[in-house]
Image (cartoon, rainbow, N blue to C red; front, side, top):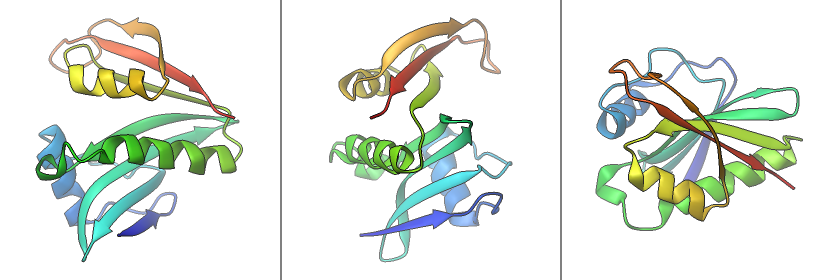
Length: 137
């Protein structure tokens, strides 16, 4: 397995947009500031992306190819992201997730994240977002 990292401001390649579309139903058009992508034989199957600012970071995307789910990759991906960010001096992480995304919410709870708030009507379709936070280190 190879871990590819995209630098700040680097545009998302087509294969990464395809992974987003498979997982989220749409690809982000804007490049994420920092990425880590897991690949086997040139095929991306998981990724995380963050936006860092002053010792904190927002986890923007955690994605595992639907064909690779159930292999424990999401927990491993979260652990890698947290370890990488702690090494960079990040002491607190934040994220938001759809209220209806039970699988992701279970993952975050299992990884030690705590609910920290709610954003009413956050998503384009009006669904609320649950906010999570986690201290590192």
